[in-house]
Image (cartoon, rainbow, N blue to C red; front, side, top):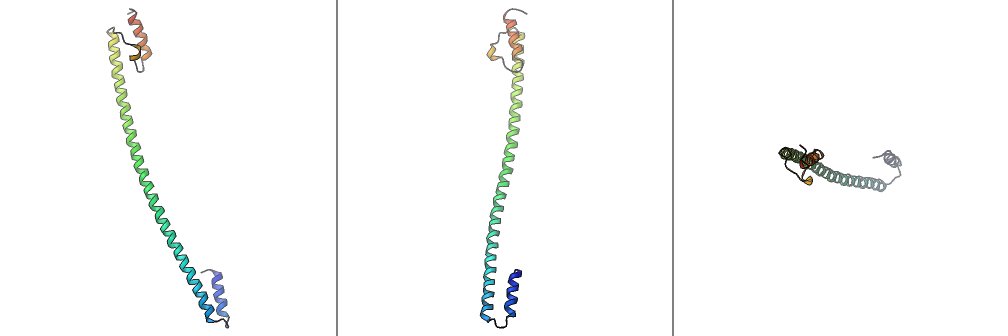
Length: 129
């Protein structure tokens, strides 16, 4: 109850001529106001509960997404390691073939040392050893 409401109640009580009906009306108005405020608080509590549930659901989804990202990143790294290992094996096989004097097609020679191998292929195919 606010100070203004208390003041009006005190003023009403101080007025000896105030009929009881006015006092009852005032109490009824205050009671209705309290009921309205209680309904408002209950509605806001429900809204807070709903929002908290949504926040919890979003946080759970964020956790799931983070786990998926970590798993995907681990999978990507594993694939990169496999790819690197395969590239290394291919480069080694190509180097062995070049050492044997084999002729490799330029479009089939890949990897980090492609330019070097192309130069070696040119030397080997032209007969310079």
